Length: 200
Ligand SMILES: NC(=O)c1ccc[n+]([C@@H]2O[C@H](COP(=O)([O-])OP(=O)(O)OC[C@H]3O[C@@H](n4cnc5c(N)ncnc54)[C@H](OP(=O)(O)O)[C@@H]3O)[C@@H](O)[C@H]2O)c1
Image (cartoon, rainbow, N blue to C red):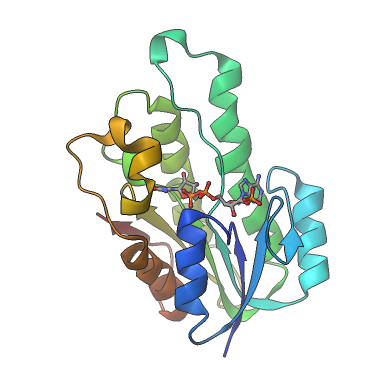
C-alpha cells in the first residue's frame, strides 16, 4: 500500500481518482477549501507547508488549476496570467516541492487536457498552459533523482463536465471520469516516466 496525496481531491476528476486509488492505497486529500488539508497551489509557501504537514509520501497527484477561457480578440494579459499563475505555476510549485518529499521510487502525476493538441475556440490560454505542463514533464522526467517518476494526464472533456463546458467542445467526444481515473492509476502504479497519457 502506498501513501498518495491528491490535490484537488474533491473535484470532478479528483473524486474519481480518490475512488480508484483508494481501492488499494492510503489517500490523503487536499484542496483549496476542501479535503483533509488546505493548500493554494499558486503559493509555494502553502505547497511547502502542505508537504511538511503530510510528511513523506509515495505519490503526489494534482487535479487542480484554473485556466482562462475567452475570445482571443478581447483577451488581456491579466486574463492570460490566470492559467500561467494557477494551472502552470501551481503544478510547477507542486513538482519542485514534491521531489524533496517523496520516498525513493515515488511518482508525481500532473494534469493537462485535450486542448494542448486539439484546439477549441476561446482556448488559447488553455492550449498554452496545457502544453507547458506537458513540456515540464518531458524535461523534468530525465532529471528527477532517486528513481522518482513524473507523468501528465491529458483528459478530453469529462461526461460529468458537459453541463459546465459543453458548448466549448461541441463535436468532441467526452469521457467518463472513471476512465480518466485509470490513467492516474497507471501513472502512479505503473513504471513509466515522462509520459503524457491521453484519455480521448
Ligand atoms: N473536467 C474536465 O472535463 C477536464 C478535462 C480536461 C482537463 N481538466 C483539468 O483537470 C483539472 C481539474 O478539473 P476538474 O474539472 O476536476 O476541477 P473541479 O471540479 O473544479 O475541482 C477542482 C479541485 O481542485 C481544487 N482546487 C482548485 N483550485 C485550487 C488551488 N488553487 N489550489 C489547490 N486546490 C485547488 C478544488 O478544491 P476546492 O473545491 O476546495 O476549491 C477541487 O478539489 C483542471 O486543471 C482542469 O483544467 C478538466
